[in-house]
Length: 104
Image (cartoon, rainbow, N blue to C red):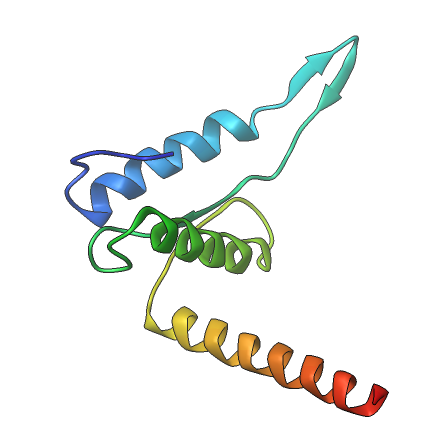
């Protein structure tokens, strides 16, 4: 979801909370109640990226962080998430290279 001109994290948070509430409502499908526990990751322009690709990547990182916690969550991308994502990426790269080296 792209919010053009949302302005502040507070305004974005209000929209996100409304989405969590609406998406989290149970649905009746052929007599069966189906519900989901939504998670939302937020990245804001220009603080968290200047291109669409950067913003989507960072919002995705924030969403996966939100999914780690129980219940409906909104998580904002920040420098701490950026550091963890870099560290995880480096570990994955190192492991991939070690496996390739060991296979030779």
